[in-house]
Image 1 (cartoon, rainbow, N blue to C red):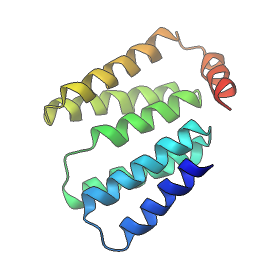
Image 2: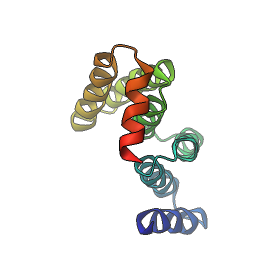
Image 3: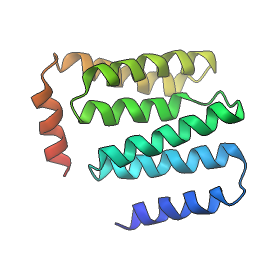
Length: 130
């Protein structure tokens, strides 16, 4: 798919010397594209890359990749990993005073909690997307 190809090109370009914030954002965007395509393992790896870059560079902008991790884990039916990532994303969004992002993360956590622990729901959503 074209969106993934563009996102991967952005990652390769950023990896050739872009500032850490741009590298982290490029990895995050690739993770989003992979999530949309139902390629959750690869998406998780990209979100983890984004998070690692943020930590290594001392960037506090970790709420976005954490939200991505939470979403991908939730879609795989990995509720505990999803919930932990959402909770960490909430803390990160509050620490950096990002109310719009905080709102998105809280909605994601609420959706996860409303699913009631049934892994079949996550699997059904994954099947519907793929």
